[in-house]
Length: 195
Image (cartoon, rainbow, N blue to C red; front, side):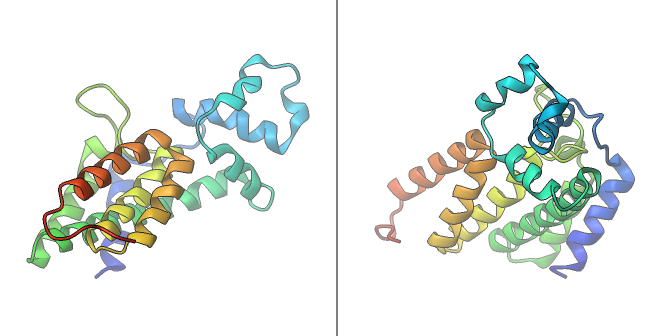
């Protein structure tokens, strides 16, 4: 169930919302960074590419490093599918942790897979959680969700390790989760939290 359900959710999500490479505005803005790291001569004296040093994520560096071995379109698709599967696994695991009935976890994964809020848009106009293309939020979301699951299981080192990895990809989202951990630690009535 822990394998079949996330994979089924990925297939359902793809059938509903599809996948795009290079046409999504977020991906289109970061591909020049990745391509310039792979081939510096592509963008000589380009002001936008020169702004890469201010980009707040290691995502372009990681993608360029991996892109030396795997073509970028295939790399993006593979990581997108793996990230989606990990995200739905995280939803399943979190629901199993919070609710005793296994049907609740199945329903949670199904709702996450069909939700346009997770894939296409959000009610406040900001970006959706996962998008229909690979971007640093698409990779950070499953990592941070699994960090939360581990935190709730009191597996501190693994949780904070994933939080650190998520911070390298999406510092803002990871900082929000770190504040949540701090608040949970400060208000814990059971015992002092210790690593």
